[in-house]
Image (cartoon, rainbow, N blue to C red; front, side, top):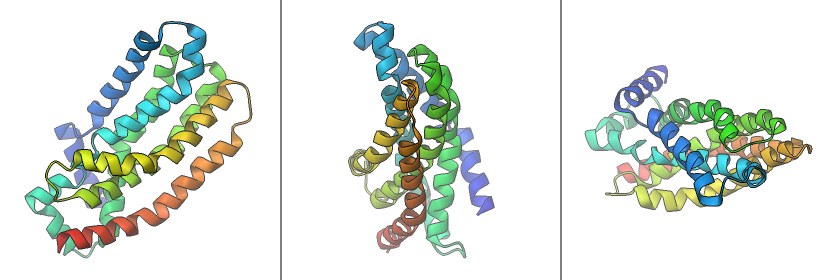
Length: 218
């Protein structure tokens, strides 16, 4: 598992598999919002939590179509399927590598981009916490979607249609936590919901993705 994790990290850094692409997309979304809704500080501060969370979600989605497709195309996925490492472990490791190269940079960049949207100072800490709790679920759900569409030509659009509805609960509670904190309210309940969703996803999705991969590789 460690060797596969290091391999995926190395490939992502060398090939730009989402590491810089996700950050660039996140930045573009945040920069374009004031042009579309106007530069009013009060309006930007009100929509900042939702915009930051939506930008992070779409940036995570951006590189998911290659999560398993590259290994399927060059035959590496068949070798992994016959290795001592179960497919559930393969999916979990790939999701972890995706989060480190895509989700973690977004978590670290969110406070900086929050300045551009005039996010209230009270919301920065909870925004980072909610993203840190929620983005692992986005990567794991994305790995499940990648397993569903592996082997399908141009399956990126189909995967997006399958994955986006599963992202909605994390988006709702993550953005709500940041919004409540920015307004000076208690954000404990939505943060607990985000943590619970992530815990459930990490517990169940590797097994679902492993079962789907076994069917697709037959």
